[in-house]
Image (cartoon, rainbow, N blue to C red):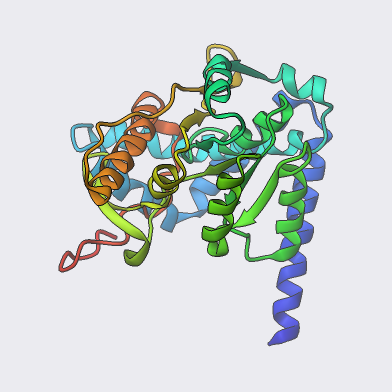
Length: 307
């Protein structure tokens, strides 16, 4: 059994390396076209993921027709394939070439926040468009920081991905053991921290707030970090612009909310404000979010599973 496991790990690694190397040698438009074709193939083969996406879209967009939601499922797989193609370029292209593949908007929001807080910022995004580009793109344009990741189960594939993520000076830390590290980093004031707060969270790490109109277990860690270290929160998103034919890096204004004298209530209000920024992007680019993820898996006590 151990030998079989090692063989599977090696096969997965070899396949991932082969795909990324092959795509990385192609011009970016060709790599993304092939990535999209792979996404279409995954749509055909991955019935379980299709069902998850369909369930999520019924919850998030009950007002849409079955045909509209079915189109969004296909667009989701298309978006994931495009991301694969673009990710292959992140490890193989020069800084100059990479900068020509994206358009940055709102960078002045980052500079304004740095004028006030220095490097001590909380940056976050959602699993929309080329979310890997949000952290990578910041380091590409000179703002390096530390961000949380969920390590890939296959350690050899994780090494490939991590080399790309840290190519221009970023650092990654495992989200499973990151609590004290993040507090320490922010209190030092020497660098920024990045997180992705839009996925399902376990009961003991979450509060329930509405996500796309449905109660969802949502991490409160970012809000607590920001409040206890007095750190500004900057949303950053990287949707695909069909009009421009490239990914955007959209840096938004800092998240604000109405404070009270109750820390628990402040955490809740700030978590809602953080989540609403993600929702706004999803409603603007509904086919580019990670609908194949079971976002509403953790339910409030007594509620049945939605999947």
